Length: 253
Image 1 (cartoon, rainbow, N blue to C red):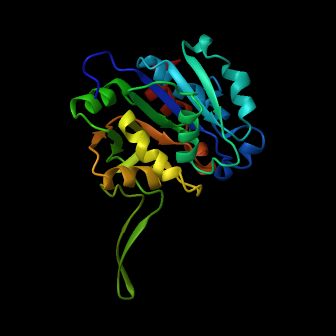
Image 2 (image 1 turned 60 degrees about the horizontal axis):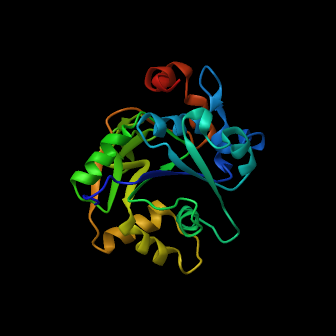
């Protein structure tokens, strides 16, 4: 981690997917532009404001499918207190890892010491500054934001032979799950380049993170104990109510 100068920190927000699990909503909106909350603001606006609120105004939006909707709405980011640039997916950017590598190699992100990578369909009250603080104090190459507060969306039965002897509705399994955010230092770019070099579809969580660990880079955990919500499906969108959003994200309005 940088010690002799102030760290250059930027954010890359992934918002390029088609949002197939959010159909039919995504027949009318780009998935991160779906209006939510009592003021019906785009989902992505909350994410952008979260970064600005925590002192990371330099943001690159990694767009693709219907990316022009995003660009028309956010522009250069000035009215949100941000400095926004865009990296459009190409036919070769088949996964989130490729999208990130494309943004880096094309100079859209520019120079950085540490990069916050955030999925654009996740709402949270994440303290981004605390994540960066942990990343620096741990001298980590990558810091994964984890949560223990994840309940499976279905009931779980305990079966013995031909009898169901127990049942729990939507239990919290107590697992350390990723919530769609990480901090990475520039030291991870070499690994990212190798992961994406073969041209096959590669994802950040599914391919880059395991490879960073395999390469024996220092990967630190950061536990989120506040609100987070994956708005990645129609069912999740329908369960998101204005009261819950206002309680946890109202400070961003």
